[in-house]
Image 1 (cartoon, rainbow, N blue to C red):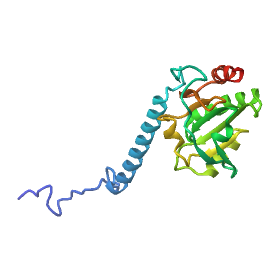
Image 2: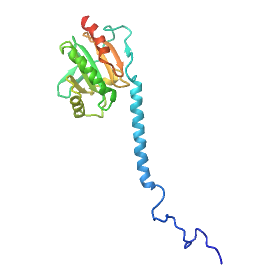
Image 3: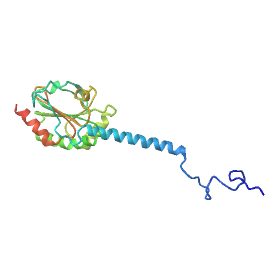
Length: 208
């Protein structure tokens, strides 16, 4: 009697297991899953790289070669804050200005809020102005407004509609810049900056 081929019809073999379920992974379901995983990995690498380029926890920052209060003219800008009020660097002449370039999704930027709150509590608004500028052009004013409320910030927030991030060389966030009373760029730091370090930069500018 001829033996049946294992692959011939009627051989009794089946491509399914005895329980009737398919083995392996359905390619139609696997492809979207791989796409989602790939996107998540790319996003994580980009965010982490941006954080590392900013120095992680701040560090020394970029002190201008001319020293505190005698740097180059700070890049000018003109914005509208999230409450609809115009704000420009020129209008703040005579005050020390702390610029906080951030995005709402940035972890170090979130930590920066507590440090800036300490700075805000130390000085009169007539002497020191803090302005947080959302440099992620994909975000909206409502997102920035919610972020401000979540962290109890009491200073002005604005969206970057005038290329402030580029003007101040913000290749990482947060980027902190301090502008003196004469409109000179006294200090810039990429990465998280603690309140004590900022206060140490601001005090000499107020005394000048």
